[in-house]
Image (cartoon, rainbow, N blue to C red; front, side, top):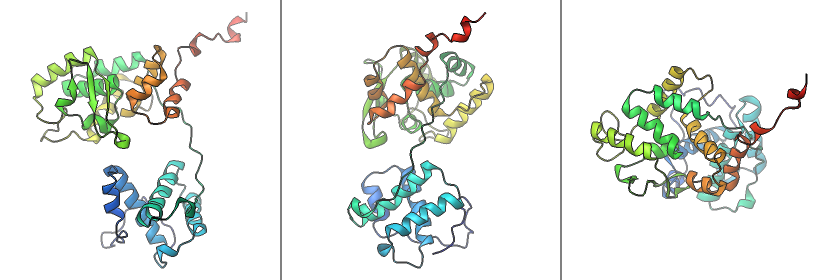
Amino acid sequence: MTKISNPYVQRPAETQPLKLPDGFLDLLQQKRYSMSTIKIYSSYFSQFQEYFANYDLKQISTDQINSYIVELINNIGISASQQNQRINAIKFYYEKVLGRTKAYYNVERPKKERKLPTVLSKHEVNLLLNITGNLKHKCILTTIYSSGLRRSELINLKVEDIDSTRRLIRITGAKGKKDRHTLLSEKLILLLREYYKAYRPKVWLFEGQKGGKYSTTSVAKIVRSAVIKAGIQKHVTPHCLRHSFATHLLEQGTNLRYIQEILGHEDPKTTQIYTRVATNELSKIRSPLDDFD
């Protein structure tokens, strides 16, 4: 076994990475994993191979793999989320590529951190949208918030996905490879019509300067710029707009089941997190301190 080095440090250019096992990449692609997941699994499994470079991967025991994960936790301090991703990459090889049963592999998983999502108030969202002068940028922020989109869903929108007659947006190939419909605000329809006349997108609703899809990095920069201009002190990402959309729906009385469908959550427990950040009922509770003289 080789000593674990920090996986965030880039390899020297002359170092050749180990070749992934036969079938690993092909199967990821056949099962239509996202490009992001393919990159993560490939990177983490490559590091796993490097650690066990002197071993036959097919003969490695569960105890050895557990020790590897523990060493990553103790020496590098990987997060619970990264720990799960690394376990999933390893499990993919043994269970999917080699076809072994799940009973063969049983690595202890960390308890998922139950962090509350960052949510903006309606006032803060309105401030972000109004302070954004660029028409395309305003449309991007408005579409994410008003339809509760993931960043990847936004950049994959095509012009034909906008159904202004039924006031719906069609989301295709979303997380979990499931298609769905989400809300299309009347105000967004008017804004998109203005945007379409000005930019004339051909295929993708939001295209880059040289055509093609808009980049996820550019979306993040738009949000960051708007947050700075608005003077909002919270750590805000594009996904915070999706969280805010869901929370505001819940606060105005929308049934949790409908919110689940709109967001495309497979597990209702994922949607229930918004009950912990919605403040419509909580704000009505009076603190006993306010009764003191």
